[in-house]
Amino acid sequence: MSITHKPLDTASASRPRLLRLDMARAIALIAMAIYHFGWDLEFFGYMTAGTTGQGGWRLFARCIASSFLFLVGFSLVLAHGRGIRWRPMLKRLSQIILAAAAISAVTYYLSPESYIFFGILHEIAFASLVGLLFLRLPPLLTVLVASLVLAAPHFARSDIFNQPWLAWVGLSTQLWRSNDYVPVFPWFGAVLLGIAAARFSQQFNLLRYLAGGIKPRFLQKPLCFMGQHSLAFYLIHQPVLIALVFLYAQIAPPARPEPHQLFTQSCIAGCSQTAGTALCQQFCSCVVTELDKAKLFEDVFIGKLNQQNSPAVQGIVTLCSPEESAGQ
Image (cartoon, rainbow, N blue to C red; front, top):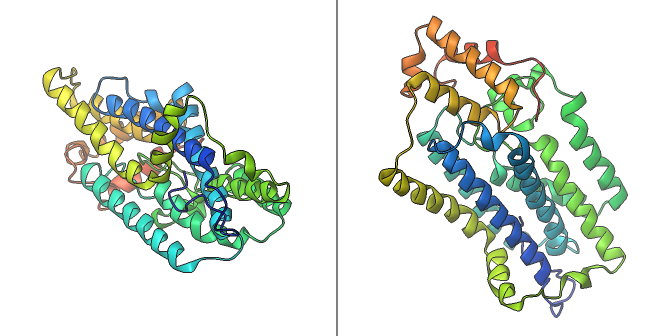
């Protein structure tokens, strides 16, 4: 999702817009909306907790995030490959940062135990700036660095990164609960692959294949419009979907489980964004048990205590986190 840059190669003002790139971005946005609708149904209790964090749903989510970040890297080359246009770049980057900060604030208010502290927008902001360093490097070298970034969580994890302020790196040995966790490692690797792909496309004159339209023609205009306004779509679609599911819940509410079951379901749903369901079930069961032992469950359940304001809760999370966590 090139939330950050418009898909134009500034080498020539007369170059036709790469419509197929816009449409690819739109298709990724539609896929994201489908996934988020499933997540909303799960959040409101219409689907089993953890459903969207495992199996085909989990693979679907990873493919969506990868495609967005790949397109960020690709578009970064098109927008700044022949010289960084600092003014529009900084203006767009500031919009992304403000949007990311707003999402963190809203999700912290609504769900402090699993708020979005480094999600897709945070990653795009980081990648849009750091990715500039790779615009002039040989694409093969960029591919090599991308491979290292993608593989790093499998060989470079360390307890050093278990501090909350380093959670954005993605190399910790414990689980971080978040409804959208897209750390630098491994996700920046997808951006680098997009940069390399765009560089190769320029070298071998392949960009012309992205300039054409699609059939049926009636889909072209709405898809292009959506792809050209990706940030607005990203910010608007989820509140709209949540509102729709909320309204439906007022008419036909789902069966509500008791507090321990509800907390466990919410815990698994957040944990499943970064680890397998089996690990999450073990982790969340442990957390509930230890909170009960410490007589902290009720305060955590009502939102009075959380990892950020209670060392005791943070200690329980650390105690229950498996040493070998998957999905980072």
